[in-house]
Image 1 (cartoon, rainbow, N blue to C red):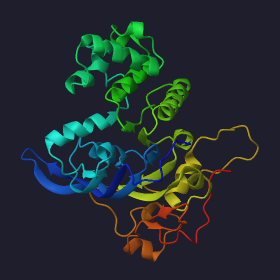
Image 2: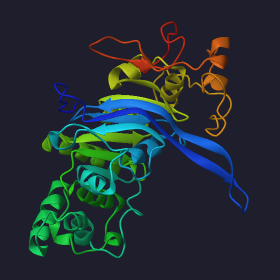
Image 3: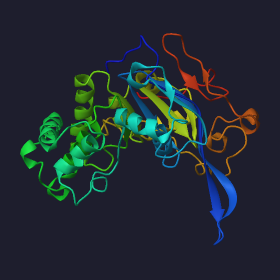
Image 4: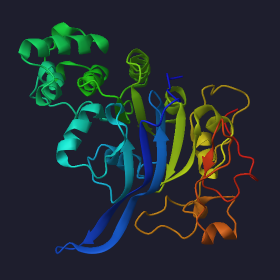
Length: 348
């Protein structure tokens, strides 16, 4: 588990975050609808914690992460961030000057190490760029010392800092990307599918590195965007499950995997690969009917009801709020009318 600081206010507090995109058609780009990519998302992250954001492709998890760093501007809602231990400021409303300062403390780590690194820049130039732009070093000599330290931190040979990205493997490139993200000494790192483009054997090395860095750099906080539940189970302290732009379940990792309370979470867990495929007793996968709802034209009531085998009439007409059914010591939020009544299957 991470070194979580539960004694103070959250490092990040997101309330009713929304991001809508206009859907256009034809040469004149006529607006024909609205795509609700993120639709009323709320969560908080304590300093030193890893919160995983999980869901199918198109559920809005990447857009949520990009809203937190203002790579895209939110349509509504607040993103309160405790910057330099001062009073929280709302990232959604700060001006460009404040945003530049914030981006030293909040960094984004991209999914594909093959496309996120400039092939015309050396490793030294890639990692030192945020240091020079933010004037965190005084000269090239100081920059080289800092880059050398960062490369050692991510277990790469500093003697190779003058090489170009094509000379490195996928796992090594992702380590370079991690070093670049850590260069300004951030407190909050948004990791967008950081290992999905890597071989399975390399994934474990990068995940262990991220855990070690969080322990070494005390207070480093992660928002871990992923779809691989095996990775999420190993990496996170808490998990938020997203479906069509909304969070449908949020609780600590162990409880979510043992006792899921939302039917969508149960289906995701059943689809995860079995770590013991030769076991005599095998779990039965839950195959969901239909397709993921269209965020431009979501169904009435609960967005998940067309695919839910437990759905009743109220699910088709009334949207369930995200409510807490856990305890004060262990909150468990879920958006389901029948969360207390259902007995859902977790991991065996």
